[in-house]
Image (tube, rainbow, N blue to C red; front, side, top):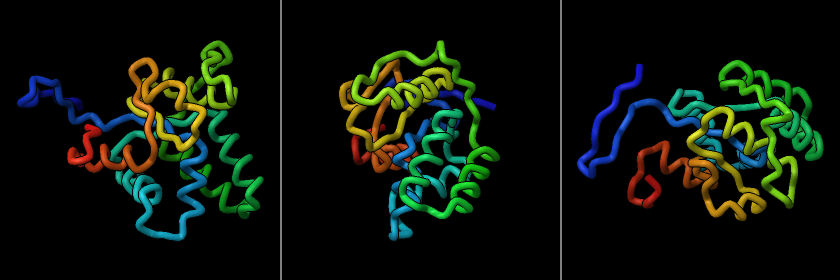
Length: 162
């Protein structure tokens, strides 16, 4: 159930968890990090605690499998990750018509963007510099890196991102 209020600044507030799409590089960064306190690992712990809604599409899942395979990550671990994502994330059906050519440098990124648009994401989380051409926003979706999204999930307003 969604409840709304008004903050002291006159902005509308809601307790609905944020909706986010992770680019495949976020999954890779979390897996490769040796630091158990890394921002990417913390994001996955917070997702599993239902602090935000993770959106995923077929193209994103395929890219995760491809990237993990390229890195030589044990296929059993990849299957386990994909199973967790499929069990707990919100699957977004992205059609070919939904994918617009926006990111010239890497057409695969257009599929990530389409998932965010179709899934009504609040955030697209990526380390990919190809998204820099959008200057941090696309159709109302904030585009930011893992650390800055973690600040939002934590409610850390000291960093000026909320």
